[in-house]
Every structure is written in structure tokens, then in C-alpha cells.
Length: 415
Ligand SMILES: Cc1cc2nc3c(=O)[nH]c(=O)nc-3n(C[C@H](O)[C@H](O)[C@H](O)COP(=O)(O)OP(=O)(O)OC[C@H]3O[C@@H](n4cnc5c(N)ncnc54)[C@H](O)[C@@H]3O)c2cc1C
Image 1 (spheres, rainbow, N blue to C red):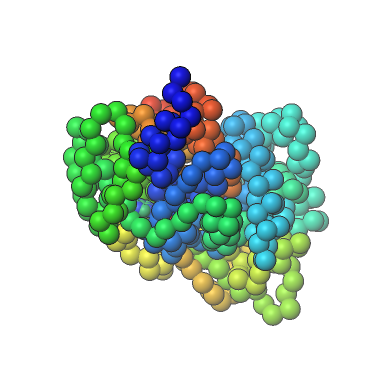
Image 2: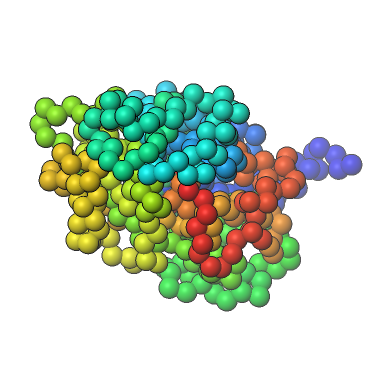
């Protein structure tokens, strides 16, 4: 047994931080928050700032819903996270969670529908299955042609993404955490090659089975007992040997249209957050939240995308595609003016499962990412889970979040 004074002295000389979290997107910010709540000394770093323009968490809004087919693990995480989002929403001066309700519509009553309902019934969620006639009556602004069934979740809705992450980092600092804007230099993985095609120069080479320091691009060396890398779409660049062929950043385009003046049918309260399964070719969107426009996007994985250098000019083809879809499902919106568009990137694992696991070479380094286009809503639960792993209160990672389960060929299974 080491005496307390000796332990304290060792800690003092070793590192001022229990954990350094690299990346202040949704995943890193919630991980840092939960580590702080566990009594750790936490330093949160981000190269460009919380939810900046190129981060995956940097968009205006994100869907939160519990419909996940048979993937109950994600239904539970969405549900667990909702309480944290509500808490954060109460702390912020402006809403973070808009309880718009979420409507998924399907051309057929496919297994995903019945599986979702089974899970929701078991978890006592008040999800309603709506016939086409009920849909037409309740949501007349949606053309329900070709739809057999809808699933309506009254308790879910939309999260204001950028606002949420920025608010959380502010709360983290108020509660005693430290945040700094710093780019962390990629540590060279044992047996790995240096990272390429990135402004992050590989410089730190770590020996042994721990990594107790990170170097910043400004030349500082920061020490900690453990490091969490929550670098979103940059993870494959930061760890090319481990993740270079396991996380696939893809180009995604999002569009916002202005409803006609005085047309209230697309406001929250009238139109829910929605997704159309459309025979597997999914489109989704949101009502005119905070008058920022009716949002619509195609949920197909786009081409591979470099988060540093990718061209973020929206394409005429993607715009034409959403207008074509609106002609069918939201005819009133099809000719409305475009008010905003964004090009962002998903950071997909091979099948859509998240990554929350230990680095294979360093037992005190954790990899948190692969949000795969659906991760934002789960971020509070991801952060709690990662904090438990990193602090040693949880020994064995959930197999679905493990590195070992991440393939090298994209084959999307989680929707
Ligand atoms: C268009 C679009 C729509 C989406 N829709 C939804 C949705 O409706 N619902 C949903 O739940 N999810 C959705 N998602 C997914 C969700 O937004 C992401 O899964 C989530 O935001 C990922 O968060 P993250 O923290 O892992 O990554 P990020 O937000 O990208 O954060 C990573 C951070 O790491 C920092 N970083 C990287 N490298 C370094 C370094 N070397 N040093 C320091 N800092 C570094 C970056 O600057 C960045 O801020 C969507 C994503 C996109 C792009």
C-alpha cells in the first residue's frame, strides 16, 4: 500500500491531468464532462474549437429518435441521452432540445417497423403506429402517397447541435474543467507509419504500453494518466495504422428551404422531424426550427471526403435530388427558395456501429468515434460509457463498440 502523501507526490510530478480529451465535438465534450463529474482533473483540447464549421457536430440541428429496428442498444442510448439533453437545454439561454415529435414513414410494414415497435413496447415508449389515412389526417402537409405505415415518437425531436456542444464546453469550464484550443500532434503508433495528408505532423513516438503525453502543434508537451481521442472524422488521420481503413468519412449535403410567408404548416408543432424510408433510399428532415428553414437531406453515404481539404460547395445534383423528392412528399416546398446549405461529413464505421474502445497498443488510450451519421443524439451516453471505461469502472467494452468488430469494407447495417 503506497502512503497517501507519496501517491500525491507521484501524481504531482507525473502529470497535472488525470485525462486529456482530444476533440471537443459532441463525443469528446460529453466524455470530458462525465470524467470531470467522476472527480478527475480533465483537459479538453480542440484544434479549431467546439463544433466548428468542419466538425461533424458543427451543423445547426440533429435528429434524436429511439426508432432503431431491432438495435435496442441504440434505442436505450437515445433514451438515456434525452435526459442529459433536456438538462443541457435548461442550462442554455436558448433551446437545445425541440420536442417536435419524430415521424418515420415506410412504403411497407417491413421487419424494421415491427422490430422497432416491439422494442418500444418493451421499454414502455408511447410510439404510435399510424395508417396512411391517419397520417393524411394528422399531417396533411405530407403527401402520404405510397406510404403504408408511419411510426410517430412524441417524446423525441431535434437537437440544436452547435449550440449544444458550445454550451456543454462552457458548463465544463464553469464546473472546473480546462479547455484549450490546441492541435494535438498524432502519436506514432507502434509499428505504424506516420500520418499522411494532414496538417497534423506525426512526431510523438511512444514506447511501452502506455502513452502519457501528447505534443501540441504549438510545441507544448502535456502529460496525463490517460488520453481519450474523440477526433471524429479526423480519427483515421490521427491513427492511420489502426483506423485508416476502418473509419470512412463521407460527403453529406444538407439543404434548408424557406416556407411561404404566413404558411405555418412547416413550423415545429405542425410538422414533426421526419424520415422517409423510401424503399431503403432514405431522406430525412426537420420543421422550420427557429425560422432557419425546412431542412432536408438524403441519407445515402456520399463519396469519401477529406475533412481538411474537401470542397464544401453544395452540388447542383444533390439540390436537384432533394427538390425531386420534395415534389413527391412535400409538394408545397418543392419550389420554395433555398435559404442555406451545408456540406458536412459522416465518419462511418463499416456497419454503422460506434467505436468506444482502447487503443490496441496503449492501455491508457481510448478511441471514441464513428458516429456514422447517427451518433449525435447518443453523445451523452457515449461520454458516460467512455468515462467509465477510461476511469476503470467498466472493464469490458460492449462488443458492438469494440475495435475488433470494425471491418474494413463499408456495409451499412445500422439505420
Ligand atoms: C450532415 C450530418 C447530419 C447528421 N445527422 C445526424 C442526426 O440527425 N442525428 C444524429 O444523432 N447524428 C447525426 N449526425 C452524426 C453526428 O453529427 C456525428 O456522429 C457527431 O457529431 C460526431 O461527433 P464527434 O465528436 O465524434 O466528431 P466531431 O464533431 O467532428 O468532433 C471531433 C473534434 O476533434 C477535433 N480534432 C480532430 N483532430 C484533432 C487534433 N489532432 N487535435 C485537436 N483536436 C482535434 C476536431 O477539431 C473536432 O472538433 C449527422 C452528421 C452529419 C455530418
